[in-house]
Image (cartoon, rainbow, N blue to C red; front, side, top):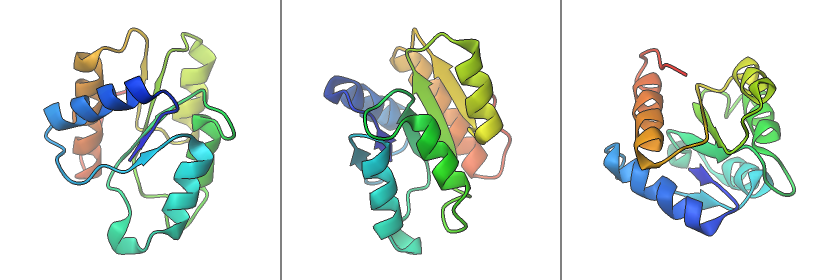
Amino acid sequence: MIVEDDVNLRFVFEAAARRAGIFEPIALAVDGQAALDALRASDAATLPALIVSDLSMPRMTGLDLLRAVKNDATLRTIPIAIITSSDNPNDRDLALAAGACSFVSKPYGIDALTKALLALREHSSGKEASG
């Protein structure tokens, strides 16, 4: 699942996912609240294997989404990467403390996003991911 309010960045995230070898159907959400609603409406068989979320979004931020997912018994095992234009080190610390498996800050071109997705995919396979 890709959670991003900017349509152009959603496209870049999708392209990076494909470069990382993630070809399964990719769910898209325009903000954290839309993502959380979709996740809670899903059954266990249709939950995403990975979530990539922007940090700064309307209605519900990526950090709030991360916290909500990690506090939900049904959703908490889904690995989440935070991708952001923020260069605030506190954002990284908060995201990692809340359970993010990866944190990528600007500049985040397609190569950086692909690397983050590969690390996240490894993590979801039971291997340790680097942040």
